[in-house]
Length: 359
Ligand SMILES: *Cc1c(COP(=O)(O)O)cnc(C)c1O
Image (cartoon, rainbow, N blue to C red; front, side):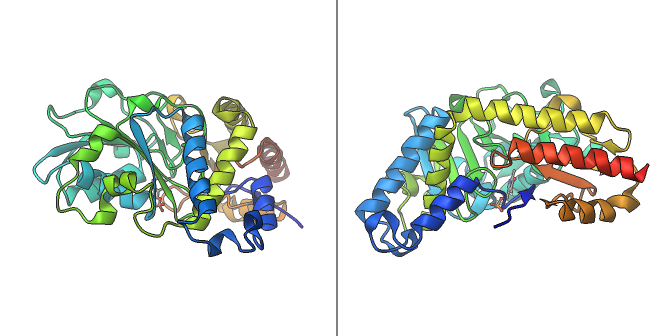
């Protein structure tokens, strides 16, 4: 077997220990004589799995009791529609802080369902910063404020939680579980699974219970958070395999000492990679230092004509998926929880050697 160091932005690397458990489990899961994909989601084993996954994610994130934890399909993108449909009427105003492509997409989606006020927009500097909170043009009566704590494409991360009284709705797809957070500061947190949780096909949604009452009355059943809250997320057949893997990942994170321990490693990984980029005039990262992402590290080469050579040689060295998003160019190393410190160290060695070889 040969595993590469996978820096994919998503679907992203999973811990090898989890993959090995899956491999062992597949033919005969928990003595059922079936794989987890072949059992009823209403059977005892799966219902226990679902309860354990919820209990573990509650423990990891210290989710208060007045929040529901939902396991939904449709990815983070569906939540960009579900947020307005569950929190605002057609005439209500909602505030969006746009610090990257995902926040822009979320605001665009909400425009179909209610009145969107873009309170701040960092596109003037190609999404390389977070506009100072005091400059945001928030409305007086917003039903909520939506933002993207980590913008996956440009690698811009909020290192603070916005203030104010309105519920905060946060797309945490690419930062959830990377460190402890104070859930009580948020109204709604949503995250597609395929970065830091598990396989694509599952979306984690954490909703403060009073907000479940705000859904539009004519909402489709599967577009209504309350339907999931009332059915333990089994309002219809859930994505059982993805949920099973998420359960394994939550257990794996607990075994590693929980999110404080994970955060320490993530902080170290990110800071040494940025240090390597900053210490060279051959590589650069355009993001303001106060809002650089711990999870997604874009960098460019001084000579873009060497990009193809860099990608080819890094791939040959076992470092894969380093190509930057087409909207940004250059490279991007996504260093989620499952990307080991060894992977980051190997990348740092590679970029130094590549620069040296170019001369
Ligand atoms: C990946 C990503 C998305 C898109 O997620 P889907 O599950 O494909 O809908 C949305 N927001 C952020 C911040 C992301 O990183």
